[in-house]
Length: 364
Image (cartoon, rainbow, N blue to C red; front, side, top):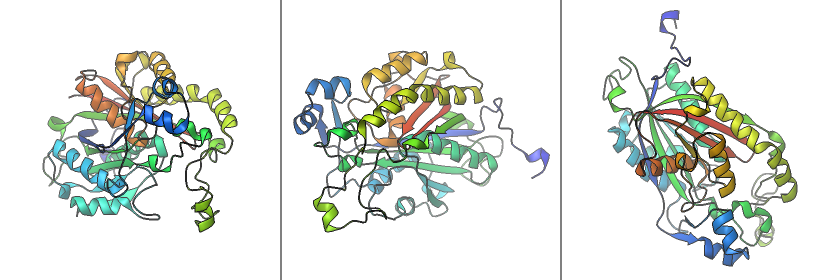
C-alpha cells in the first residue's frame, strides 16, 4: 500500500465505517422477577428493585438456539441495511460460547442459513464485553480494506446455565436470552466497488468511531462452569453433582475485588474511547450499557453526564450478554432518546474481566 492509499484513522476521520442496519430478536417466553424470587428464596423487592429484573426472556428447550436467534436478528439487520446476504464479505459471531453444540462454529451455520455465500465466517469471544470489541475489530478490518461489508451477530441463552438455588451466583440471576445483529460497511468515495452501492453515506444509521478496552486477568477464574471442559470432562458423576451450571467459587472475594476496580475501569475505557473519537464525557448523549444492578447503572450514567434519560435500563430483558447494547440502543430510539447528531457510547464489561467501549456518531 502506498502512502496515498493509507486510510486516515485519526480522530478527524469521522465517516470511515458506517452502521447501515441493525436487528434484534428475543424469544416470547418470559420469567418474572417474582418467579425468580420464589425459586431462589431472595425477596422479590431485591430481585426487582436492587437487581433490576422485572422480567426476562427465556428460550424453550427445543427452540431458539443461538444460531436460530442470530438468523432472525441477521435477517432484520440485512433488511434494515437494504442488503442481500450475498453482499456480505464477513459474518462475525461474537455471542455466547454456550451455543447449539460444543466445539462448533455458529458463525458458519448462521452464514449458511442466511445465504451469505460470498462471506467467510468467524467467531470472537469477549463474553459480555463482546459488542464494543466486535465493533472495534470489524471497524479495523474495514479500514484496512480487508472486507467491505460485515454482519456482526450475537446471541445468548446462558439463562440455561443458571442455578437459582446457588446464592453465590445470584448476580447472574439476571441472565436473559436474545440476539442482535449489525451491518457495518466501509464508507467513503467508491467504497462500494462492484457491490450494491458505490457509497454508503446516504444509508448510514451511524458512524463507528474510537474504542478502548482493558482486561484484569486476576478475575479469569472467578466465574466458571466447573465441569464440561478439559480439566473436568463431562461424566455421569459431574451431571449428578450439578457441576454444569455457572458458579462463583469465592463469591465474597470476587465481589470485594470487583468493587475496588469496576467503576474506575468503566470510566477509563469510556474516556479512552471518547478521547480517540475527539470527544469528552460532556459530549455523550446516550449510553448503551450492560445490564447491571440498578443503582450502579444510574451512578454510571450520572458520572458520564447523561442522567437517566441518557440510557435505557433493561429491566424487562435482563442481561443478554453482548446483545445488551443493541437492545438498549433500539429502546432508546423508540423512546426518542437517540436522535440525529447524537453521540452514542457502547459500554460493557464481561467476566474475565474485560471492560470495553466504542463510540458511535448517530445520524439517523
